[in-house]
Length: 238
Ligand SMILES: [Zn+2]
Image (tube, rainbow, N blue to C red):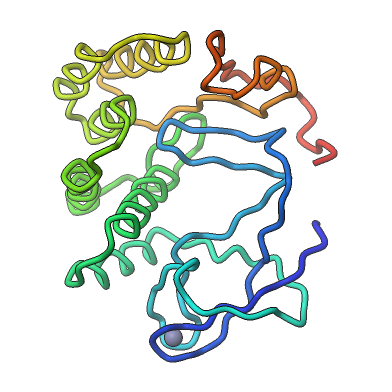
């Protein structure tokens, strides 16, 4: 377990306090990146951007609220369950949000939906109902509406994840392929769309120093990710 210090978030609705992990600077080695933008960096644990107040049960954006220094250790990241992100989306459906916050909220829904129902190499206990799928679809279409500078690769990927395969392919057809990474991603998304798959896929598995040697990671001229497991040891020193 990492030694962790806490900070305290103050709920904007009831002023209740929530001790939470204080995110520290770390490094991204050992990290895993997914096609729905989910990232896991074992050496740099992050808190959920949307937090649930343990006192009044409302949801707020972690980086928009008052906070103060905590006096006890906490390793709570405040990650939301699928039921909780549904509540959060409901809470904010009637409220006009800043664009950035709305993108955060709806993208988080997409990621937790994928955690729950459709992520590559993850065994899922649950199947999405028609209501779940409708809610997922609503988030993606809303993202498409408000996120004017979203990358086309991500737009195509999100359409694929809601089974809009033609739309996904259409975006890929219009894409400028200028780097190996773009080519890799586009062909993976296209291939999955053609076989009717909606799951979020792994882009890299446990980033190594080698992955960074070409510098700037995805920006690199020659960067092509290796999504296959490279290390057997799950207990890495990170
Ligand atoms: Zn509260």
